[in-house]
Image (spheres, rainbow, N blue to C red):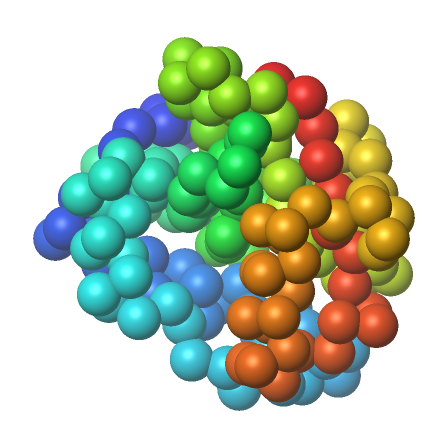
Length: 168
């Protein structure tokens, strides 16, 4: 099978929301509130598509993965990245992150940042293998601290999460 990374299309918003729902199923019995959480709103996805901040991993003409990002200070903040479970372990997620890094570099930005669960094997440990390092809580920039406040307002348990960064 051949994969391609490309900008997501407006007509794919519901497919992208479906990828997010399917990916959340991996959290059953681990973090059940993620399973029950609604996927990213269509309006947010449309805004990211319009700004160039939503890339799709495509296989045989259909999206099977995506990464959504936005500029925050000197980098691109990875808001969401998901791969359909049937397409995991094929480096599609890594390719999506590399594509986001290339966009950051082209825009004169210096890093990718994200927030993820510390102990879930396909979260922080995975990102560490891809070159991300943890950012100490007391070293969060104002932009990342604002994202943490957004997470708390959504009901996320930030004690289980870490912010990470990788140079582009």
